[in-house]
Length: 333
Image (cartoon, rainbow, N blue to C red; front, side, top):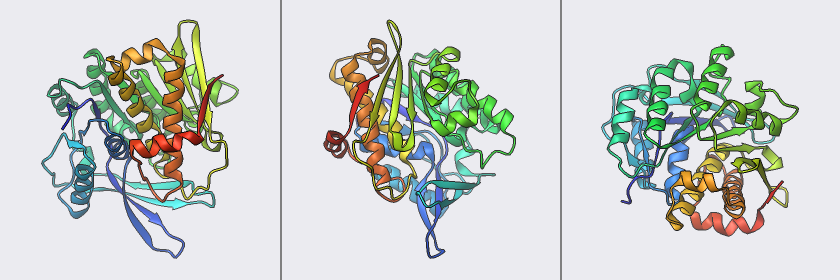
């Protein structure tokens, strides 16, 4: 296996997706789990740091991840059960979630264990988390881990991926998300995330711009649903904005995992450009080459688009995304 360059941490669970006939279809999922799988399928050497349960669902989750080429940071199974999410889809294929997360396997992790696992990876360039890992109940795990990895010189990637269905008190949840974003070099948010975070700004793009004023982020990736996506980067003359959108309407099966595939596509493309040019990922972001930025954004959006055209989180290979990218273009705004 190639030397690990990116580590993800956060939830791995079973999505029970409601079907039209009333059945519940079990699907492997969880934000960090999806991102890890998608990165590996995109050719990025990836490890997933949380443990899996020894129950049947945990064995299925770990087997799929290994088959996709992800290294397990905690290969020994644990006794707590696997997390569950019940997923309903509206008429547009957008999901709503109910989570069952108490006493579950992926939460049996500590900041010390995460940092110890990362310390054993000399080629590690970036760490990534988000989603349910930003529950304030887990702040003592993920915030110290992110802070330590940042001090070690690794790029910190955080996907806000706000899940109001799992948190009843939004104030501490919002505060913990903002604390996590304040440690991030790369931030991924959706327009819906920004609405929940209630940031100042007339629209999502202005709200994303506001994040630059209160975080050290080098790059903010903003997904806009059917309106495509934007990427904001710090250039020599201030914030530079790139935008991408599919030229034709997309037939959406559902949007489960689309944001995860978008983020994985962005990071895999970043690592690919870094490796091709003998740079670090941080070095690529600091130079703000317009061609590279457009390429990263178009690749990320193409990966997300391929996902929504299929059921559930369905990551694509690097070759599949590059072929589909011919239908997506990104421009500097």
